[in-house]
Structures are given as C-alpha cells and as structure tokens.
Length: 162
Image (cartoon, rainbow, N blue to C red; front, side, top):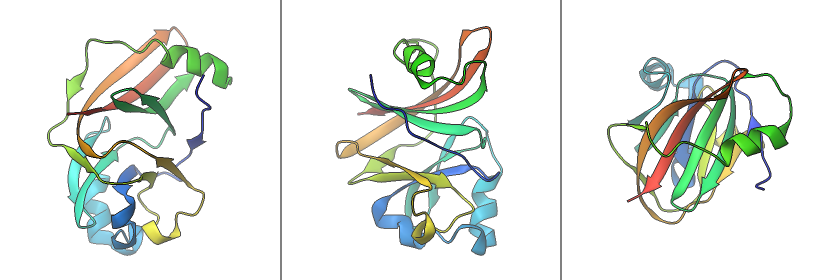
C-alpha cells in the first residue's frame, strides 16, 4: 500500500507546477494571474501559467496523489464517511478503468511537480505542497467522479504518460 500524504487548501484552487516554474508563480500577489486560473471547471484543466503549462484543480477539497505505473491520480475527497487512510487506499486500489473524460492539452514533465494552494507564491510553499515525481515526458489528463460506496465521493484527475 502506498503511504497517503495530503494537503488542504485555504480555499483557493490547487495549481500543479513543475519545480522549474515555482519561482515564477506569485500566487495571490499577482492578482491577474491568480484570477486567470481561479475561475473555471472544478474538475480540472490544463492552462498556461508561470512560464509553462500547469494543471489547475478547481475545488479546495483535501488533495492526495496516488501513483500509478502509467502516471498517477490527483484525488480530491469531496465526501468520505471513514476518516481512515487505509479505507481510502483500498478505494484507490480499485480505480475505474472506464468513464474517464479527457482534459484539453498536455502536461510536460521534466522534473518534480508540486501541487499547492494557488493563492500561495511558489517560492513560499514550504511543506504545504505535494511533491510528485513522475518519469520525464508528456502526460495527458482525464477526470472522473468516483463513488466507490454510498458515503464516498472522490474527484479524480489522472495523468497518463503518452
């Protein structure tokens, strides 16, 4: 089982940026850039930001990353009856194969990615970020709402290496 690590937003959307672009993201201090990504589809979208491509996850629900052989899945927990990471991990071990809807664009990965509250400047994320290591390459993204039981709803964005 993969150890689950999560972060919580202070209310803004999440942004996922490559390490090389962190210093270019000024967070809410650059109100125009922040507002350009703050409003859009909650399930996720790929945008141009901080000098490159970024993944934006619109809802501020608790965020996890679940690695897969072909990439990984960002998991936002919108409803979960059990406050138990082992139960969540069992749900993630049986992610659906079908029903994923593609997001427009692709994410280029050349090094570590960081997911954090978009209101925070990239230089200031400290420990308030998920650090993600994926093999270098281009990744497509797809989204899905997964309801593995009556008390759980997970908003998923899967990155798949092309």
